[in-house]
Image 1 (cartoon, rainbow over the protein chains, first blue to last red):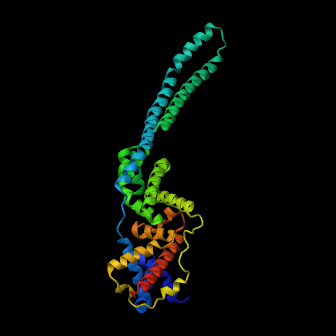
Image 2 (image 1 turned 90 degrees about the vertical axis):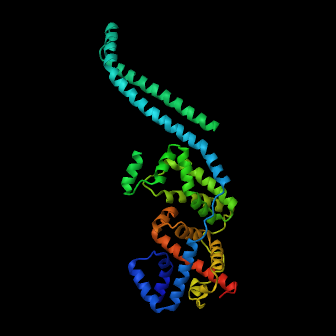
Image 3 (image 1 turned 180 degrees about the vertical axis):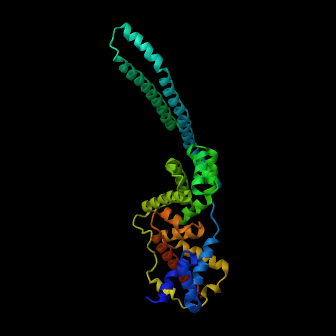
Length: 157
Length: 205
């Protein structure tokens, strides 16, 4: 392939400025001595500048209003989910803090009850398991309630 | 706010309004959505119009694009270029539409005769482009653009009208940089060929 052929291949991307500095140098050198490539290069430059200067078609006001109206219920659902997440996260954290903070009292009360019932002290571990399980159960009920509310909102909107 | 600051810090740029809007839209803020819509409406509409030509269809695809954006914005990675992400969403919708409407039509094959491009590249029409008036030339460029295969029209629109860098175009199209270069090059060659043919047909050469 001759240098002329190689330059011809580079000309489209030279017009968009998407070739390397070395390639730019070679193209410049070649254009200085090749009228045919100069003309082709001018054509590409003209096409590029005309395409850049084309008027931008704009969407109608009615279309934009329709998009905003269609987006509104979807955005409301996102907002509700975001709010739920903001409420649930501190609630879960608070739940854990309360569980940990109250455990000594629960344990003391459990010991009294178990001693009164003459149960073996190894059952304290079971009591902790039950206490934790109740906490998880409560959290699950809350999560299901939030989920049902979200899907109900989705159905109505 | 923290997210926006982190994003800007990571990218080493000042916080952009669009960046803040995107995060707010993820939380369902309608004002942020309105702002995002207004920021991209013209560019996105033009891009879709380049795909389908008909304003009524472009309207429909524009609407679908924004609904798809809302559907998937939670999965948008803030580290990624939003322009590229948005145009990729629009592109998928446009391609789906074209395939549904004309499943047999190729998106990248020129519809006109397949004379070798080199025949026109080595044209012997001295100063042809200088002979016509600017408005006529611009009109002819528009016609030549409209007659391009969809994939050529798309890449020309992204490079010249949207002024995207090749790397951004690669993200939108989901193809390697080398393929972007080669497609852009072929699109320009084809555009020139069609333009010169139209010019000869109109008898201005």
